Length: 138
Image 1 (cartoon, rainbow, N blue to C red):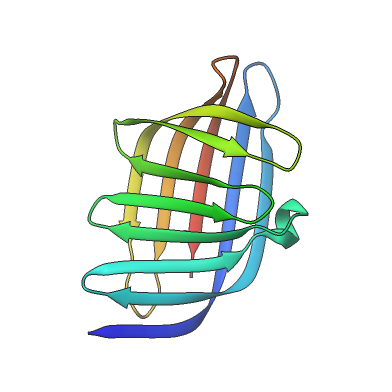
Image 2: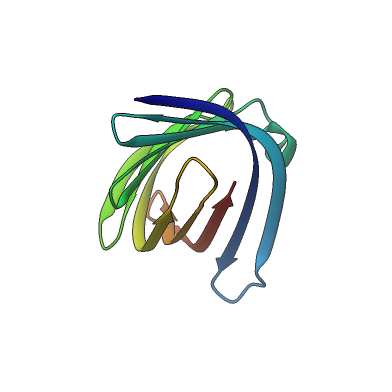
């Protein structure tokens, strides 16, 4: 069975670098919820938050969240508790490698609303390390 409907999505993200203050971003935007064959897809435009033309697609299955970013900035990140994920990040000016270590993934999604909460550490090209939280509610 396939379900598809428009939803209002609120994304709250925090980032902390060692010895720095926490930076928080919040965006509420229109998005699309789709469910097909036990997999949930949430998609939204990130441009209002980040100032670029990126589209985000979240693919949620079991205990894993895959985030695909398309547009000016492109990457794919897989969040699964306790696992490391290595990938590239492409911007109009530069491309670099990132490593993501997922510390927590909580998923409670359904047709009538839900929330995804992720805690992870992101390292850019092995040099800078940032601790992130990501909450997505719809």
